[in-house]
Image: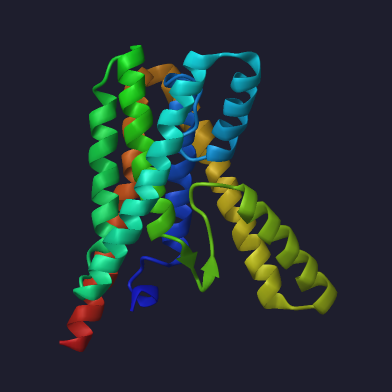
Length: 227
């Protein structure tokens, strides 16, 4: 049913990728140079800081890494609970949590303590998005990272060209489109930061609100047809 409810549609994937890029850029530009989503970058920096003996910086990086892990665990538990009780609000519930989190961090000042709070909250909800929205149009997709999408895009396009398979070609273009939207999200957030400062993170609410509205409309349509 989820595949038909809008939660796993290409439109939702695009909107969530755009939001993911915005949040990664926000924490990197405004909150101490850490990534909300790209824990690969954080773990590499952690290794570098360990080698350089920068203990305090290591502790600051552990916050988003551990928060991301915890968010993934909570998302899995939420999914199990939702499936066991036949709930249909799992995806929208995660979106609401993200929106509330964004609003909260937009109010926090630029201080080390506030950065620590932000870098625990945003990676937590981003991990929930990663775990909850993991498949679109029948394909495993990440809306918060680009590494896997780049690899899958290249592989799909290569197979599409060699095998003359249009489905694979469309799949490759789909992955590249999501990577492009992630980049555009990062660019947009950074650009808006120059004009709005910390409040620029509020613009990340727009793609999340649109995703929530789209999923809700599709859900209502399905329910009305089965009533």
